[in-house]
Image: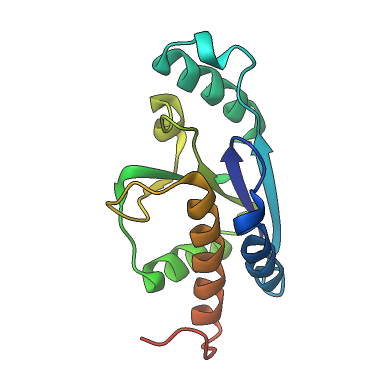
Length: 157
């Protein structure tokens, strides 16, 4: 199984890049892993919020295969413990999933088309977090889940 970490928007800012790269490298000891960034539409400033989300969704849906397992990060999603995330990853691997995609939406979140396609909707927090930090937290939590699955010392519960 390959873990894909997708995000709408610019690539990582220097203040989080090192941490994201470190956790991504650590994840690669357990699973193949890859980041992909989807650029915003060129005319984003002239679009209404819902139109922008729809354009982002159409671009994303073209990149998602029907067999991919998609986890949409959304403020209205279910909050998971680190152990529940580990269980979800293990369950996905047990289903022989080729691709497990974690998707961070744009500034206005994800369109309903994406949320309907998602196999799971996950909220990292009730707090509003900057996208750059969400990327770092996502990478760290996936690494933590991997160590939980291997019963390694990183996670202390």
